[in-house]
Length: 321
Image (tube, rainbow, N blue to C red; front, side, top):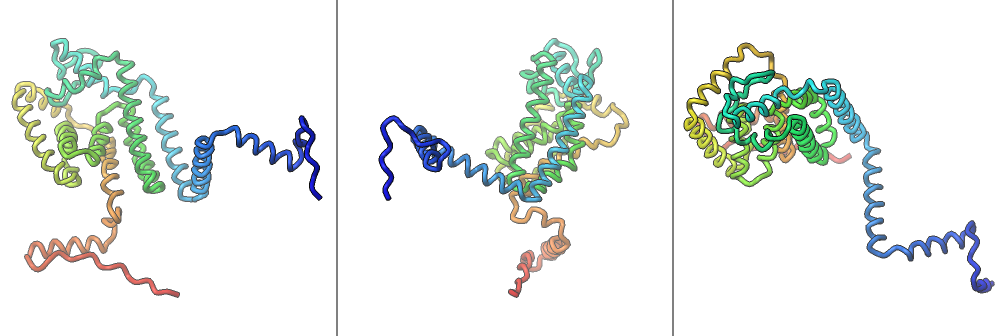
């Protein structure tokens, strides 16, 4: 039996099913279609993220990253104003140089500046800031760039990224505490794997001329990046020869530190291998004995000049049932 029409001015009872449907319809008519489409996209994204959080591997990755960040943060808070000794050396050295002083033999409670003299102008835009502001920019800028690299790696291999970051937590924390430029150079080597060849080579060459350890990253650059890198490295040599008197002073100061403890903070450079590893079809094949045997066979063939290098063996067939 058909229901009678509702009298004018009366509305369905809110608690009834018909009333709830009418309210939803009225609210839906108040929202324009583009907004409804965006809301649908957000709902689907939230459902997808919720389904991911039920993955045990992602839960373990989030736990490891949270624990590592908590340790880093607590260490930086505990150190307080005592941190930043290395960054303060760069800051003070540039200021002394701008005022006509000797950055390699500073006066006051500063470590000496130990890098190439022609690199002093590279620090100048940052060093003209007051120390408190400069230290904030140095540390916070580094953390933001580090977070970007973690985000890139996490999207591809969540648990592997979390484990690697947790293992390297101490080197990360040590560099963030002292303000040593190792972490910035690591991020430069990371960026060198994503940029155009001339910039890739420049980033690698500058990092190499500052610390020399980044020289091992030359093979993982693109072909053009490797060529530009050698060119920029020759430019660095020419610039050091052009400032030879100060370069000699720099080398004397650099090698005059005497015995130094084991530099565990240098382990942070391992983080720069992540883009190269993750973009390989099988990132960790170098850990397998079969890969070592293939490398040995390739080397044997190249040494003796017999035939072509061996090809990787095809994966074994999986029998059904």
